[in-house]
Each structure stands twice: as C-alpha cells, then as structure tokens.
Image (cartoon, rainbow, N blue to C red):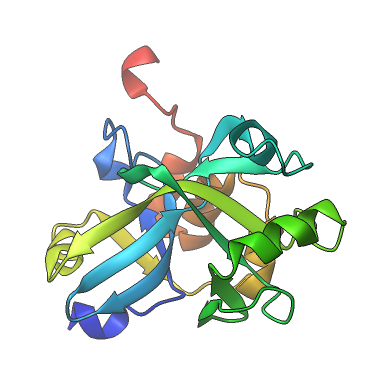
Length: 186
C-alpha cells in the first residue's frame, strides 16, 4: 500500500509526466509530515530571487529563500540540522528539524552561529489533504525515495538536483535527464 511507503523524511521526485505544472515541474520535495489527515512538504530545489535579509532586514545574512510550495506563500518556514541551538524545533527525520524559536534563530544567524549549510528558508509549503498524496502517487505524479543525504540535504546545491535524482533512478528515467525543461521550446 502506498501510504505505508510514505513517511516523513522521504523525498518525492516529480515524475517527468507532470511537465507544465508551474508549481511542481522538476521538483524534489522533502516530506516533513505524513499522517492519516494529510501530508506537508517543502520543495527543496526551487530557489527564489530573495535572501533572508530581503524579507527580514534585521537578519544580516544572504541565505537564499526557496519556494516551498503553493500553500501559504506569504509565510516563512525553515528546516535545519541544529536542534541543540534552536529550541522548540520538531524532528522530521535523519537529523533534519522543522521550525523552532524564530527570535533565537535570528540572533544565532546574526552572531554567526548558524551557517547556510545549517538552515534553509521557504516561502510557502506543499500540502495534501487526507489521501490526496496517495491518489497522486497512484496517478504516477511522484516517485518516493529515501533521503540518502540525511541532514546534509540542507546544504546540497539545488541547481541540478532533480536531474541527479532522475539519473539515480536509471532505467526509463535516463532519457528525461537531458530533456529540456520545456520541451515545447526545443
């Protein structure tokens, strides 16, 4: 059963068949929560043109902001690998944590205790209602994989991340690894 395969910490790789979907084309999503009521994740490979300082001027850092998904894009979320520094964070899995005390986080960034390999910020998130993600899985919209990067995924370059994941899948997916993002422009 698909829902048994899904668990927080897994990566969801967009199937090549969802070309043209503005939110999810060539996306890799870290599944932050999955339960009987639904699922939440963050697109980890879609950087925006903003930095944290652009959105919160009192933070003196140029950490990139990522498009976490189409839900609540006016809210800022973050994942990190430093729960000992950020109180009230919630473990996703593999040493990756979600949220925590934001005031402490701002101070720790400003004093240089938090580096870009420790934290990733998102505008919005990806959400699914009960059984919605399972239905999308059955419709071949997503491929589930383990997060082999564990908490190092936070510092992972995103430029070719979807392509790297497709190449790792091998087989019939290899043909898609070099396909243009928009085949209509080919």
